[in-house]
Amino acid sequence: MTLLQTTDLTLTRPGGETVLHDVSLQMAAGERVGLIGPNGAGKTSLMLCLTGVVRPTDGTVQMDGSTLSPGGFHRDMGFVFQQADDQLFSPTVAEDVAFGARNLGLTGKALEAAVNAAMDRVGITPLADRPVHHLSGGEKRLACLAGVLVMEPRLLLLDEPSAALDLRNRRRLIELLRSMDQAMLIASHDLELVLELCPRVILIDDGHIMAGGPARDILGDAGLMARHGQEVPHSLTHQGHIAHAHQRAI
Ligand SMILES: Nc1ncnc2c1ncn2[C@@H]1O[C@H](COP(=O)(O)OP(=O)(O)OP(=O)(O)O)[C@@H](O)[C@H]1O
Ligand SMILES: [Mg+2]
Image (cartoon, helix red, strand yellow):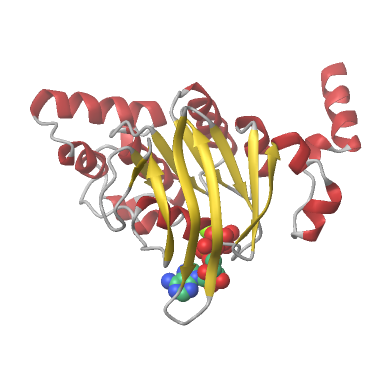
């Protein structure tokens, strides 16, 4: 069943530069899709248009067949910003996580339980009472994720979710996302993460969708990847296979 559908989304920035050109894509309920492309390709711009934070110049966004009004709050969509500082604003971590849940009408014990569960899922319970501006970069990212998960959106938009995370937290994030049944659009330069989580990938460059299809076909296409400033992830290269075989042998 189609969950998200964009039709000919176009975004021209006030300066006159068109950063999205006729972007049409579909996502099914529960589907995980990777969004890859070089710096400045339009990944974040696309997510901002999907969430309604930025009003597209042209085109539509539909969820479950209903057209979303640009600039509105779409409770089914949870957006984790690329820059954590754009998202966090409450005095403490727990209050920040509570903000979205409160917006959805949760209060009292139910609110507390939802906040505690979200912090626990991403492993930041010990940080609950810390001021958000005293967190490390990676801790901020995790607090942002908890603040979105607490709202239980049906579609998660994750903009560079593994940026600034150490290996343990990156692994925790991958396992957490893998365990969730929500649909996710994951914009990332961490192509190994994309490969692990996303059966399908969309490649965007210069505001155009350049390719879309099974992750292994797109990410493993050396020519396509090179044309758009990307490299085939190590685990799909010949050396990657040898390295994995070697790891298994020792
Ligand atoms: N507020 C803005 N005003 C004008 N142009 C902008 C604005 N934000 C982004 N752009 C431009 O839009 C284009 C797409 O940027 P966007 O942030 O969507 O790229 P991206 O694919 O997310 O890149 P990255 O991988 O670096 O995060 C770039 O050329 C960028 O300079
Ligand atoms: Mg971006």
